Length: 398
Image (cartoon, rainbow, N blue to C red; front, top):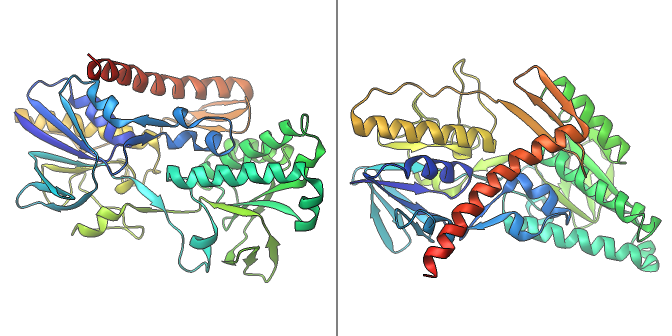
């Protein structure tokens, strides 16, 4: 029986377990400091109050129990790894492994050169921070109902730092919610202004022209003010300061402008890039060891041409599937091939039942059709998790 330890219950970690559990000669342990799997791709809807917590968080213990005692969940934080002894230290417990998969993900990078950024903004990579942002958003909407209080405090501006995928989805969903609220609670909801800020010259840097143009048009139709080519130098409790000397008063800010690898990477001696991601071999091994793999956002993943792939759930899952297959090949003594993958497509949720998408480079969709395609993908993933959880819940209560 081979022991596989997976550190991290994100998209990559769960996909790796799904692919490995079918082999009867493999015993799997999942370690995570959180008791839940966070569907970060749905953060935009949760923050805007469109989704409830049960739609973005899945209990890992019940999910693992769904494999009928073939997968064990350990709710602890992995603090160090001994590659020589093939063991993982998880707080007060030591676990040995034959194969190790690092799937620890990434966290929001609150740049130190922007004074006050960490203290005065929220991120979406962490469920607790997303929850705090949701609370602040709802408080702001409540204030608009008390018109006198709102007027005394001045402009009610929401700032979103970073116009990548997460930033534009959050901006669009909140703007859509405010537009919808104006029909029920009145025009006071329109007093809240959303600013999308990025140092790049365009929103969605690195994405196709179609997605950029259609997204920009949608955001503008929702009343989002887009500030590209704009550098933030500092934040205090009430103002965002730009490098050109201008200031923007704000009520609260969400920052999606950068990521850095999870803290466990700091304890690992291996080549890393500028944001702390591990730089692996072509077969996603680290530390020069054939039995240790890294997948998802904690590692810099490249395609066949050497281009760095974006840290998305899609790439995390593709790398997980590859690693699961490679572990099977290593056990069987079969030669494995280098990892090779590309982005199959990207869908961007842009408020309500509107989305923009590009698939396989040539297929481009927008509006309700794109929304249905995106929801179908998300629903299929969520349904798979729920079916596994239902099995686990029944097993625990027999």
